[in-house]
Image (cartoon, rainbow, N blue to C red):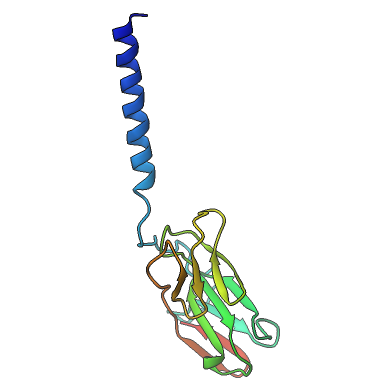
Length: 148
């Protein structure tokens, strides 16, 4: 192979690799994609994202549930709306599904691997995310909690 052909081929290969890398990184940003299935629990009430039975779920302070596009956390005792935090389960950095709640922080899943963490109220604790998680309204009727 001639030196000129070799350099031409290498130049094209490098250009293609760089273009692929730029395209792969362009997905980021602070705008998550909408959850394609915001509520896997069928519910006749439109606007309801999640329904929970407080007799069997999130009973203790620190308990959490990730379902239907929502992270629901019990932050205090008592079955009143102020005892719960409900935020979107979609990370605002790369749109990954949040994976858990530990040490008072909501953690972004290992599928993104960027390490963003959020406080229970949805505010950013550790970046690279810069935008807070969307908050949802919690309503309680008897022992049924509804996230809207």
